[in-house]
Image (cartoon, helix red, strand yellow):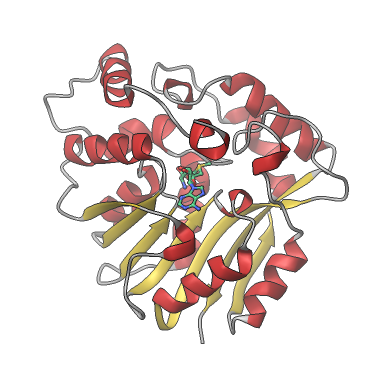
Length: 266
Ligand SMILES: C[S@@+](CC[C@H](N)C(=O)[O-])C[C@H]1O[C@@H](n2cnc3c(N)ncnc32)[C@H](O)[C@@H]1O
């Protein structure tokens, strides 16, 4: 196994998750609440706080059909399904993460509302005009072919549907500290500037409803994020402290930027 496949692999993930749940004093035989798992299953900058903020911006309704691309362990999908009551399809390329997502959907009783599909964002296994909302958090930086990615998002969205995302964009200098949370080495990191993301989406007919750089806000509040618990990303992310430290340093030095946006399809 090499490259991204290795980067996002986590053998025995179900056993690891169950052990962490028990170590946190929770009983996996009883229904868990999605909010009890937030430090484990929101694998992106800002964690569950950032997911809640994007949820508020995206104005998703209970009747919306949502696709989460690169859904990881489906923490954001469970937040959406439990907070809003909507149905969410998760598309995820890592078989280990899919297994973890299915387990956590079952333990939270949300498996009726969330379906996990193993697959690639560059060939979405859904018909045209399937979704009201496409949601994506910290995934685009793994995908070199952004034209195909945005074309696929446009294709599966209904006319007037929304694309809500947060992303890491290129800063003013090349990324130099590895490993990072999304790539062990530069071969799997495909950052483009915020302006380029906006321009590529514009070429596909998307109109920006919100487009924000949240870098400074994140740096100012990140220190308050950490609360010690056995339920952390470290359950399935190797070298987490080193990766998180490199990401923070990259942000502080302007090598990367954080972008959050909601776009409307034509
Ligand atoms: C940093 S994680 C974010 C996971 C999730 N979005 C979250 O915020 O909790 C990036 C995820 O994108 C997935 N991914 C990367 N490239 C992908 C692709 N081409 N198709 C589908 N999933 C992809 C990875 O397997 C990984 O689960």
